[in-house]
Amino acid sequence: MDKKLIIEQDNDTSFVDVQKLFDHNKEILVKLSSLQEPIEIRDGDELLGAILPKNIYKKLCDQIEVDTNKNLKILLVDDTRLIISTAKRYLNKLQFHNIQQSMDLDEGYKLFKEYNPDMVILDIVMPETQRFESGIDLLQTIKKEKNNTIVIMLTGSSERETIVRCLSNGANAYLLKPFNFDRLKETLNSLL
Image (cartoon, rainbow, N blue to C red; front, top):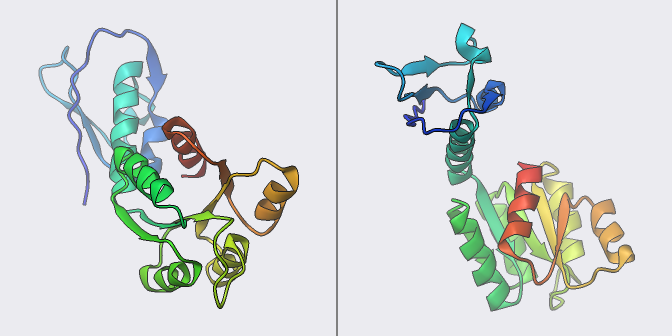
């Protein structure tokens, strides 16, 4: 289903290219206050190379990001309630709402199998379970079973060895705990 956006122009007069907007296969309807009728910009149209004020471009990109995020399935696996609730609050603020959570590695794996998430945010240091010694063991299993799953590792350690171990086992990124909203947003933007 095509998505259409109507965005009013404000007074910013700087311009940028809108080519990037069509990476998401969405139809965008932009209403400029200087026009009597809205203009439509579609992928493949001659208007594809059109230029828009920066503030409108940013609003369009933000809206596309919101639309894209709504369907992304995320699994949080951490044994600290505060980390789970903070991560969930930050993700909701970024318009990610399709979230499952676990405070146990075995249960996290079970949810991974049932829920089939697009992304897993996973703590490294968690209590050992029958199947997994640490979050890195679960990371290895996730990447073996579904390599295209995005995995962000959470760690309280900034030791190079820990970070290298995560990345060499297939993690797409890592976040040092405690992490803040901007750091999570920056990490997600670099991966999506």
